[in-house]
Image 1: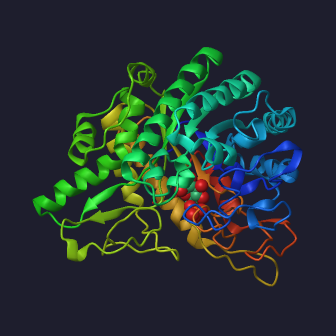
Image 2: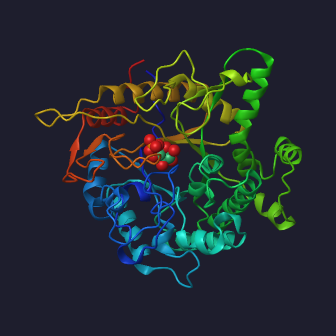
Image 3: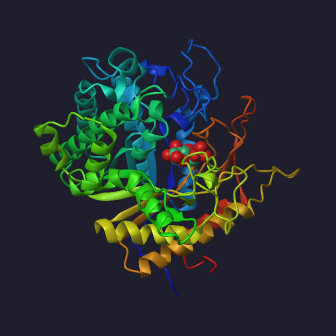
Length: 464
Ligand code: BG6
């Protein structure tokens, strides 16, 4: 019988701005997420305190986390991915002292997890940064932000070193190419050269966080986080195959820098060919040598690439430009479902880096129907996760070192791309709607019991 290793980390993944709410409580500052009420691709809207944007309350995890963690524990989670909101710790990013109330909140959160033997996996920056750093410094375009981030990272490593041993630097660091405000605090119409300069600063900051983590939490491990955007050639035409290599390198480049400690030659050529003259100092090059201990990534879909401009239509998934694959079904949101692609991606990343891997996001966003008796029969979600986990297990059989699996949104949360609550990922339903109505009450979906059994049997209950 095929099972996952008994040391495997099983759980779910969340992000502060998508679950916590309490967006101005206890000294928290405004973040880039707070000023993007329509999601990561939406325009910036400066907030007035008291505005009832959906993320202001989100699912109120800030106040309800003990109940939620107890439910995660009931499913058998031994791991929970959360992020720290940088703005709870340094409300403006450049504050002289950290905000004690923000630190105290995460102390309580990690203590609650410890009570249930749940290992925290903590993202330092998940799709948000202090809005004041964008307004006053120009976001990651300004080299000074590296220092502010390093101070924030060192502050939380020092404070939580006894409680948190697993860390991630920047969520989906490659997303900056598609959502510059969310990724690097730059306006959507910024030039590619400016975006790459900001990305460079963020890569240096990521490496300095690795260095700091190793100094302050020596028994800890710190990883990067990539959007695993695996692309296939639409045909076997050599032009399609080569373009696909380039498309895959456009996101693998981030992993190459973070895992190998230097810019790959193909990227330096890309900068040269496009006339991008990035400022990369000797001390930046030294910093980049601090490489991550493991690679984490999200996986939702794959897409196709063609060199034929006429076929190059707009993306169907809302994340990357990709041509639909005629052999795959799509979710209600147009994300193409490809379980075998996960096995391919795991093998590609393992072959490329030979570092442990961690699937820190995977799942199906779907509209759920609450039946008259209150039950929610989310067989589509069970089937999606079952099929992806089967392929993850196959990849382990292939020799891939896989640390764990945290499904995205184990409890319904606000979606990142469009800030919707109707796009649900959870095993736990939250009674809240896109218009903000609802009681916020939690209830178990059918998938709750299914995931519990998967974890309890170390995956033996999965259906091939
Ligand atoms: C990833 C993000 O891109 O995908 C998450 O790291 C996000 O923050 C998830 O929520 C799913 O996307 P969406 O738009 O369905 O929430």
